[in-house]
Image (cartoon, rainbow, N blue to C red):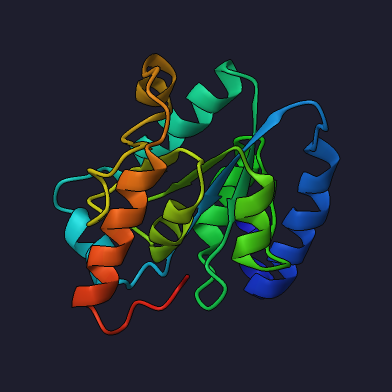
Length: 178
């Protein structure tokens, strides 16, 4: 672990990505975890109530137990090398190339803490796992853990999601994802 601290972060990330490609499996469903900037205010506010590392380890453990291939997607503008190392060490893949939308499209489940990628994913029929306190966490098909998703037999209510996105777009000028 200490060896990696001597390399620049981008070099380490490239190495972890190459090594993690050896772990891919074509016959597993994909659970994509989208990280966010560790200085994001909504993430910092969650730190008082949410154990981020514990929730990630639980997500990975539950994913492995249920035969999911987990892909870690670092934030494109704020690489958290400690988080990338955690995911790599836990046996997941790391994918930093391509668009977020491409990874959303090829994934079966989307997960994040409270990133806008989760909000962006609302226009899909895919379940979303929110490990933090996202403003969209009470929407149809949004769960707090993989276990709660797997226990729930309700499908995503696309109409409810569409109405929610419409309300948000009407009230917030910054939202223009769809």
